[in-house]
Image (cartoon, rainbow, N blue to C red):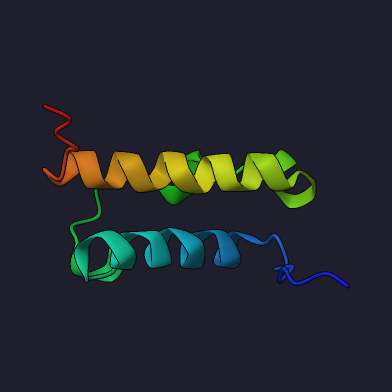
Length: 76
């Protein structure tokens, strides 16, 4: 039995997952930040059928949104 939830891979789900990732890191969501990226630039047809591509694009959009708004990860 699978313990994992399977989300429909739609553009709306994609934006929701980016929002959740931002909320986990900052405590606020994508609607609290300036519109600095176009989510449609990260969404492509492969996201609908390939779970790895879906999550890679969620991560890319999350990182770019954070960086564009001055929340860069400082490793040093």
